[in-house]
Image (cartoon, rainbow, N blue to C red; front, side):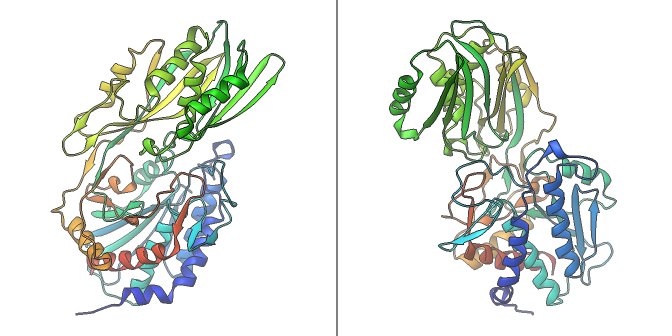
Length: 472
């Protein structure tokens, strides 16, 4: 029986791992559709990150394949038979937009007080590179395998999964038989709620005592909007009203900017961003701005837009006020994030509501409820729907991953069902595994995203043994 000290093997490769990770973190790989084209389907950044990762893999002796700059993969099968099962490892190289509020350049990684700060350090470049080095250890030790390993990296996980749609349509190989995505937390994510975005449409034209000319908030549907900006006219004493409003909600640490010119006022209200799967961890700048605006006499579509935000969406993370709430005994509640907002007096208003829903709830049920809201003229469903997903604890994939986690942490493993969506759900026997540890601050999708450096190495150790145990 072969005994490998995976911790010692990671120790030997710490500097190389960090060097490769830094090279990827320096790439702003947020989606940029303004500069997208046939060669850059999600913009230049995601394509650049994919190229860089595949070059690292080629340097290490793998034969890679790039699927038209959507997805890349390579396989490793040291001794596995042609008809052997395939373990899939699926990470992603795209990131959410950096946003504001950083203490350092989000695309110039820095290590401060033992923490690595950069956009993507935790979600998902850090974990993906840790997983890559775990496999690199198996390869460099020439460990014989009974199963093949396919390492897949996507470039559109944060904004729609169009990368994986393209990959599964064009990949000539069958789906991996089982696998995991290093894109969540330990000990394991073996259940994921369904995911759908529903768009509320409002009339734009408004002619009240106070007029809403425009409203804009949110960088992505799966992020809590940090800030929101409205341009209005007809309201008086705004400075005093804003100061009073912020003081009344001091516990939320709100702040504002106000500019008044040519009869119009531009108000920006700042809250706190968070991952859209856990909206309760953020302070939605858009809902609080609508709460402030709701005291004024708006009319028509503007009044409806503001009223829905202030009276239905504010702090309504489970859809109780909306009427969309639903709880399943196994998978838990339905969560809601009002992620992207827009209003134009010359066209329309729109609010994107991202729902994470358990088995038993459905997009159609929620659509029917939302359509009854006063002033909503249409409820549109997003093209991408993820249905609820669950792999039982009795599955050998889950039990093996839990065993390895327990061995290296001394902690008891347990199942977890989340509202977030990971690439693990792409496989029928797929889960998410790491790389955030218990007690580690969750800074994904936030300013100053970070990952404790030692936890990156610790994750690599766990991944190395887990991959080996699943494929030996």
